[in-house]
Every structure is written in C-alpha cells, then in structure tokens.
Amino acid sequence: MNASPSPDHWSQRLSKAMATPSEGTSPVANQNNHTDGINIPDSLPAAYQRTFQKVDQHLLTPGNRFQASSFWHSLSFAIEGWVYAFKTQRNFRIDVFILAATVTMGCLFQVSWGAWLALAFAMGLLLFAECANTAVELLVDFWTHGEFDIRAKRIKDVMAGACLLMAATVGVVELLVFAPKLLALAAAG
Image (cartoon, rainbow, N blue to C red; front, side):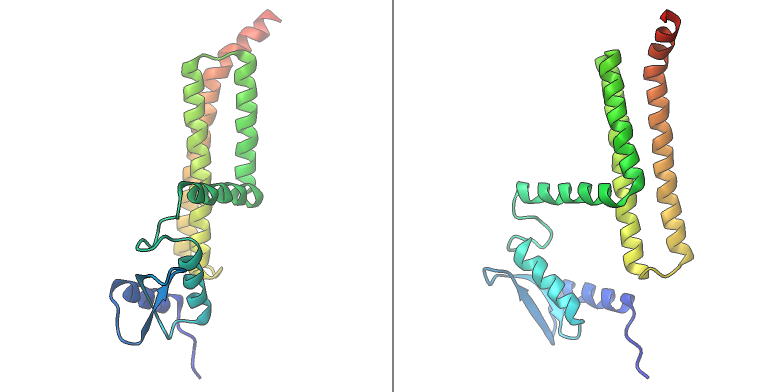
C-alpha cells in the first residue's frame, strides 16, 4: 500500500526546486513567457503546480517571485487581509469596535495630541498583533492540516498571549488617558 508523501516531503522538494534548476523540472513562465527562476518538479501534485502557475501569471513581476506588480496591487492585498481578519476573527472585530469607541471618546473629551499619539500607537499595535496572530494561526493550520500537534498548540498559545499582552497595554493607555477626564466629569456632575 502506497501512502501519499507528507507535507514536509513536498516542502523540501519545493525548496530544492526553487534553489537550483535540475533535470525533470519544468520552469514556470509568466504571462510574458519570462522564466523567473521558479522550477517546479513534475512530480509535484497538480494542485500545487496550478497554484504556482496562477501566482506567477497574475501576481508577480518578471524576475522577482515575491513582489506585487504595483503599489496599488500590494495595497489591495493588505485590504484583503484586513477584510479577511474582520470577517473571520471575532477578536479583530472587538478590537475595531474598541478603536471606534476610543476615537469617539477622544473626540468627546478633546484629548491632547500626545494622548492621541499614545492611543493611536497602542491601538495600531493591537490590530497588528491580531493580524499577525491570524496569519500565524492560518500558517500553523496549513502545515498541520488541522490535525492536533502540541507544537502547533504552543505556537498558537504564544501568539494569543502576545495579543492579550497588547490588549492589556491598550487598556492601561486608555485608562491613563480617559480616567482623569471621567473623574473630572463625575466630580462636576
């Protein structure tokens, strides 16, 4: 009985193919028939071959395997990432709601430029941490094929801990900015 090769087998073969052209490989050409150095083994599953061909033909410039064809093209990728995170990640949606509430409170209390800077920096780092967490989770799930692996769990736990730490930092910054304003409002009212 022949078992199908593991994902590690294919990633090793792919790394080898990208490093040096060898016999039994077919170079992937982009829409301009320009070979950019990616050589895909003929034994690679057809789904992987189609994926690399699609990436090469539609997303990449000749001669550079990992660069979008324009600034606007790469910006569209970033926006797609934000939309994906917003649609699929509950914590990202919560963080966006907190961002909206923070901006609203900042406008109502007319906070200083320094306070705005601290709030913007903290919220930006929190959203960055959530996006990084989402990317790491997707990568881990991709490589484990959704099967349990204690190392994958630890990776995800560490990233979740980083997000929690950043959320706590945002909470402290918001407390430092808004607590004096809320106390003054309560004392006046």
